[in-house]
Image (cartoon, rainbow, N blue to C red; front, side):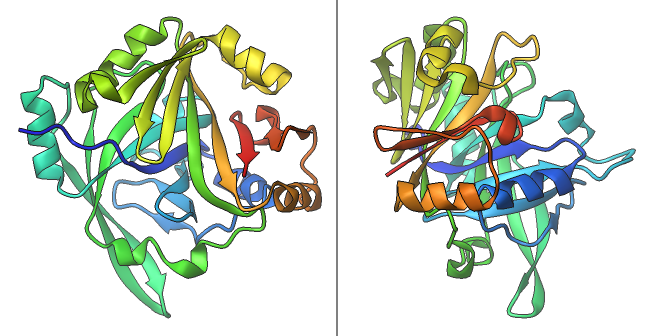
Length: 280
């Protein structure tokens, strides 16, 4: 059976139980967010939709005693990297046959208001088994109702973002950390970069680097590790205009932004503990 192709579906910022704060921050960063949605599994979200991928803010209600309480076990910030799947049953079968430690598919829903009517967006995910990924959640998402998620009216952002170009992962041993992706997609999907490895994910990439390499690239803008030896550190967004992104960040009163060589960097302390980069 052929291994799944590596395509990016979305990335997830964990807001723990403080969605109001997270939504305010990401709106001020220049993202257009969808209305708050509520999953049948007990979590809630806002999405920032791009061309073929998206960013998800996820949280649980304050004082929740059930549902996705596991979100409280993770730090604020980038917590999920999600691959696309056209057929979760086939994806699960191929990965299991290849020896990749995945859980059977889980299906859930989320009501969405479209054209004034409520409809159920349906998803099925295939997740890595507990303990396999030390830095957060890595899984596949199969959309049954793509028309309720990718809608043009949600794709326009004040910061000009059109795609996620890169996710950054810190690992003490990048080569060891990249082995999972080689098993998932084939060894040709993993390449050497300075200070680590990169995984080719469709038009995006996941860079797995040492903390020293992350700090060399982003300096004091890096997130707090909170004692973690491995963690998801940040995202690079492709924008139609760095100047447009700069204006949006200024209007949102986002402090500490640096600009150099056609890139903007937002320090992690201004973006819920995830360093953000905007490039053209």
